[in-house]
Length: 257
Image (tube, rainbow, N blue to C red; front, top):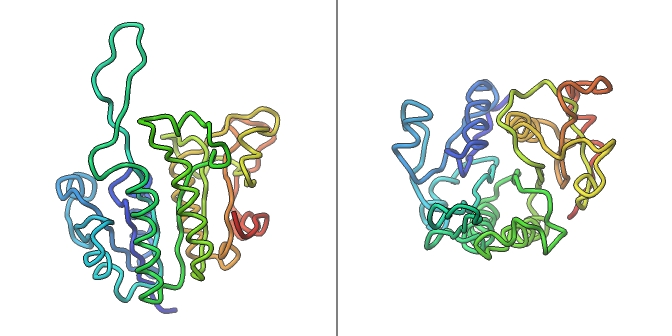
């Protein structure tokens, strides 16, 4: 079996770093490279910047160099809102985005850059991690900093689907910093799990489970050209059967937005 070369962008994020670490554990299958902006954060998370490319997703030359000879690309970049100032008592905090870091620039233009260069270089497969809620333009996340983040994410997903590259789009529910591999995962489409969760379960999922889905999507052919929402049953749900057969899970999903 030949070793696949994978680039993970957003590699120092909370989910991206988990993906990189999981792929490192599969060195007989993958050679993983991370793409990130902050060298200090890389060393804090990984102890060394070996296997990392420093750059910005809107710097096409650096992206092209990083993606050269890769088989697959994992996109985990996302705009991050910053609190303007500590709120006064009784007031809600206000958020904004740093210059160059708006959802339009990061979640659309930056992801479009990655897709364009991947297509130019003949990348075989892109796994894109997004968020549920993209069918609702009035979703509260869109109001943060007036960034319309879910709208721009959805535009990038549509662009990827129409690019001609094999894709897997994972739209996660609310992300939990809890252990993975202990829950039953549920997949759906078009925010139906968000609007009508089965038995009223929380619409959330551990980050570790999302990271495992990314890795499995790189392995399982059933994940190719699929886009889906995903949440998990609570760990203490008596009806839950811990998800272990990822081929079967991906077979429940469908192509397109």
